Image (cartoon, rainbow, N blue to C red):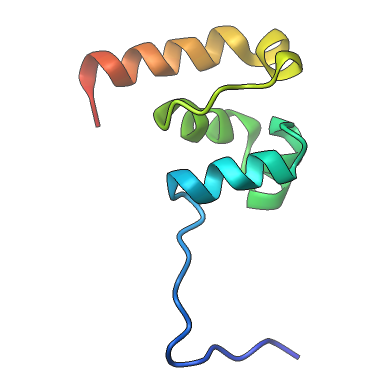
Length: 80
C-alpha cells in the first residue's frame, strides 16, 4: 500500500545539492549504485554530481574521471 503524504510534509528534491551529496554518501560513494537508486544511467548521475561539484570517490574518479571533468569544464564555461 502506498504511503500517503501529509499536508505539511516537506517535498524533497532528489536533485538538490545537499540531498544528492548525502545520497552519494549513503551509496558508499558509488556512482553505479547511486544511479540505480535514482533509476537513471550512470552518465546522468555523473552529470548531476559534476554540476554541483560533488567530489567523486577515488574508485569513481578512476572509472569516470575524464567524463566527470569534461562535464565540470562545460558547466564552468557555459554555466547553467
